[in-house]
Length: 328
Image 1 (cartoon, helix red, strand yellow):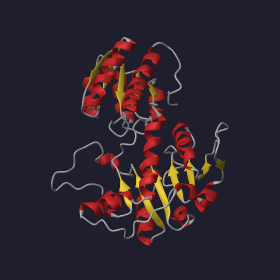
Image 2 (spheres, helix red, strand yellow; image 1 turned 180 degrees about the horizontal axis):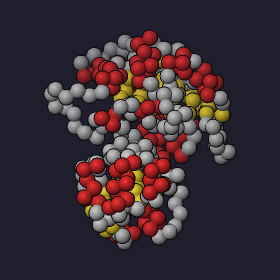
Image 3 (cartoon, helix red, strand yellow; image 1 turned 30 degrees about the horizontal axis):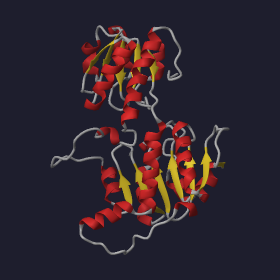
Image 4 (cartoon, helix red, strand yellow; image 1 turned 180 degrees about the vertical axis):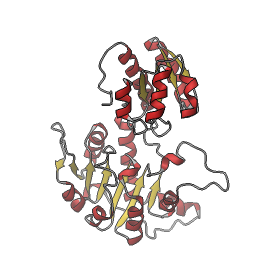
């Protein structure tokens, strides 16, 4: 079996070599993202490995891929919004998404929470200007706080596990509550907004969850609430978030993602004259925000897991086996 991989970073190459040997497949890699102009690069291959937000897999492109012989697409990301799933199903192209160690994002989430409650970003900024006074940097202690977790899948569960040792009250919302979680109380979404000192997002992006954090939901939250997002940028209406920060309703933000980030994420934008997403720049400018460029997942374990998920899924497809990672 032959697989062609796109958007391959330097850190991923060794894992492609490892899993090509493990699963007995031939893999060629390209550092460039896949676009409609790259159809010739897939000829002779049965499967593709891609990343969400870095490929064009619209209906017309899928039709061309099918004609070129592509039968399987394995994403190296949990999200797969880049592909037209209905068109893929109609064309008989099977699609899988990825899974990886939930502790990569879960650990990062707790780091963002701790940095926000102790105002670490502001403290580090002040230290660079030789300001070592106490000033307005008094923080909070975890055991005195209520943390609301939206979404209790693999990552949400890992976050709850991590937080359990801090002695904080943990509440959660999920339309499908887990039966094997301890130290957590499920509540309605409105109750979570009302009672949480900190809200952390760990749900998927869909029509139902798009902009779930908006002007109306922010109004239901505690004054000074801390918002953490290491999930998907478009869960949050960025303009409403900025308004909440400016009004003081939102006390602090720790976010690893932002809607519209696909325009620039994973690229070097430091050169003079380049303009990023306007709302992203505004969000980064506040003293009480910590904004990082979608790197919560980025650990050696998670990178290995994502590459293996992508390869193993298409190998299972070819062998006629089912995989829980297939996207329907």
